[in-house]
Length: 231
Image 1 (cartoon, rainbow, N blue to C red):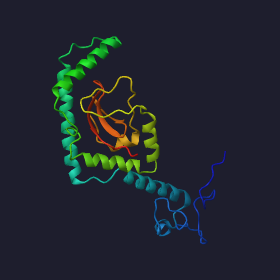
Image 2: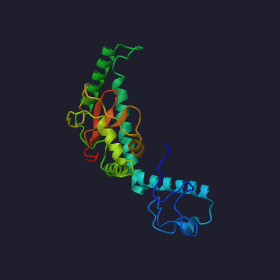
Image 3: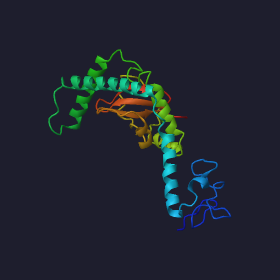
Image 4: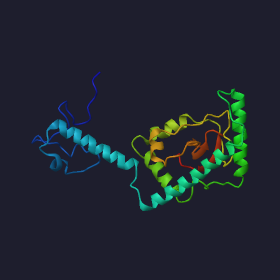
């Protein structure tokens, strides 16, 4: 099957003007409006195409990952401190429970995890939204996620996330166990790459439009950011 060419292209490469140079008025791969021929004039065709591919990749990358600001480092440091403290609490409380020996039966594993969730919920009985998604990091996470959703493949990311969500409308509440009978949606690779890394035990998920932080072992909603997924 022959792949159709973009407008103005031939089998010999991008559209060219009467002098044989690249016609930058008809082909603007990264949204540039002029000056392309002046930059790359005289470069052989194949290296030229490779060069432009790298340049376009750089453009896409800069749209997906906004430039860091000095305040970002401080916000991320505080977020990592909060997630680290939560993980310490998780391990401390789990150590109080009888250890699971070898490949334990599913019922015993479930009982262990429910008991762990109860201990964590009790220890964090005063926890509220924003305790871990602190105010300093919230705008950074929102900005990075929205940059991904506004990118070339953002609509597909959003569709993929929605496809894996339950049809049931579930509220996001801190310290509430995620229902056993409801599948946990995934986070696409591009969205995940834009978010701050997490320690073991914690994962990002979407519940409706909310970005939740879930303790995957205890199946517990640790914190959430409302309305991160666009409508």
